[in-house]
Length: 589
Image (cartoon, rainbow, N blue to C red; front, top):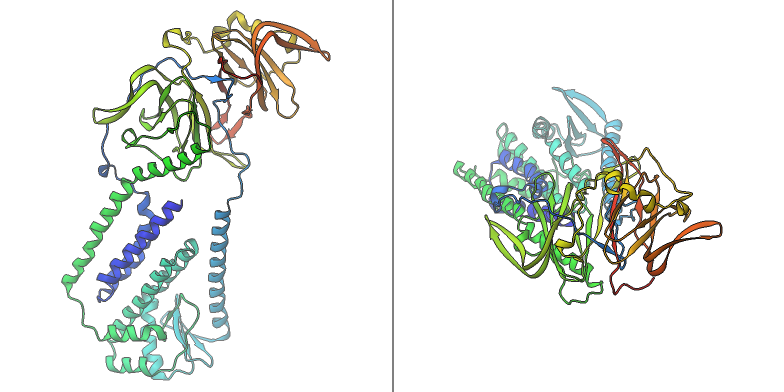
């Protein structure tokens, strides 16, 4: 957001400089009026315009289905799932902005109130569908909307000339211009450039009205009136004031100026290359966004304990077409294990396009931030000797010594979920590691149901004794899919956060997958034991599953939130996938 605001200010300054240098002294008042009204709006819109013709064109990246080998070890238990932001910290920048906008709105309301008071205490008449308001004991003169305000201290000759002047303001709807800039001053109260714009449009209104007046009365008499009349300055900034001390000299100089030649209108064509240059900049600034993102990630990575002095990064060449949404404070946190370097591609499920590529060194974490809304899958290559090559005009990252690759079968849904109470911005935590060779991978073709995957192993995986108080909700078609490695057997207890009671105990042997289904709505954490020689014992009247030869145990730090989220489109039923394995160097917890 800060980057967008900075862009709008720079574009407004550029348009104002162009106006002051080439157009301010010309007599093309109508053209200048349009210029001053439109260019502030252009500065707000142009940062959002991305023209693909200005960017390098690349072919789509097509992918094939490979076996999944994403793993999570006991060293760092991470759950692949949606992390909703339940408690947002106070955004003090937003509070400051709203306070400034509120104060600006209050000042505008006070100005309208002053006008209403003046109209209430003054004598009013009508002239050609225009309201004439006579101000008692005053020599002021100004107009707003369909009303012309004249002080009763003005002479009849002065009132006649002023009426002609102010009628031009009323008929040409100059008050609409002033209200437009007052609204901009509320929305962009922190931006001083809007005040400069309003001062430019104010003097331009006077030029337009003066030019109309001298076409009907003597120019010299009109100039003498501007010089000789004693006047006061009204503090209501959005009215068209006849007697404005700061503008009198400029108005007289413009009255004495000859009309600009028609050929001078071609100077407005300078807007074309300026806008084209801005569009080139806004369309091709992804690289700078990428650099900013890389710096932010580097700061995050500096706080981590890395065994390698190099850091994970988003390499420039394969990220030429990277997509970012700076308005979304989401992330994909990826932790790579110690077995191999990795290249991770984030692929859109709708277009099959690669939106981001990250190169991981061994044993490192990286935050992929500002991911646009959409659904994505993850492609991963493991290997050594990182390199880049161009295939069909597309820069691809690869390993010269590639060991294996995969496409994750999980969908990362980064679409924002709007509920009655809050906005849920998804973020994900993921651990990847290459612990097995591709030839050793178990067959994962049958993952559709408990019948095909768990099979006759159901009673063994959820033994009766420690599951006497198990909880099920047959109306929920959710699951926790657990995959074990070849190092050790695993016992997993699913424990509620609020009561610390186990609702399900699962025992899974080596190299197996198991779906824990129909989990009641709640928030849970996992208690995990690794070992051999499964056994059961009774402690305080409760049947407990344990390993006679226990190797390690842990309590997972991540929260598994199985609460169903109801949206306008339907129900979002969370499910989670984890892979558990024990490395030789894992500590006992």
